[in-house]
Length: 191
Image 1: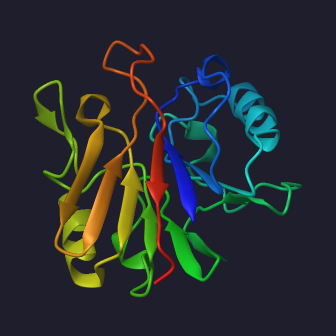
Image 2: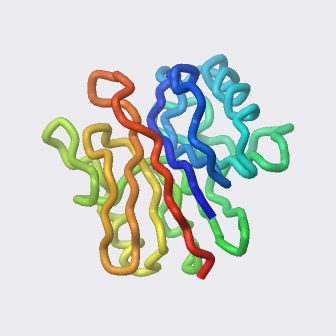
């Protein structure tokens, strides 16, 4: 399975142009800049027409009008709003945790964890500040997902392998809100 991972587009998704092909498109939050319903609808209209077999997104700290949403009505079957819920694709369980929601909600058997926040001190340094979450890091150390996909810390774009988990920060913007990073392709084996 191939995953195209993006994050922190802050309403600039329309400027991305044609995205590289993959099986699953994952957006790790901050789909909007100001968190308005109009911004969310603009993103959803763009996300729906993206030519990927499956599409997943979670809420970021800027996505205010979705922070407490449990679901979004009338999404296509191939589009998954993972707000404290999971979906299994090709035998792999994806779980999305809502921004600033209890980390204990993450199940023990998740294969691919999608959050907005990074774990503390893993691809989280931006503008001289560690933006990661200590409780999230401790939970990851217990459950050991194969992949953890996130964003939030714009200047910490990159990948890192630690023990059994591959970490990906796919923030596409820098701290000046300029699109500077490329969407990231991840090759995921089924076992």
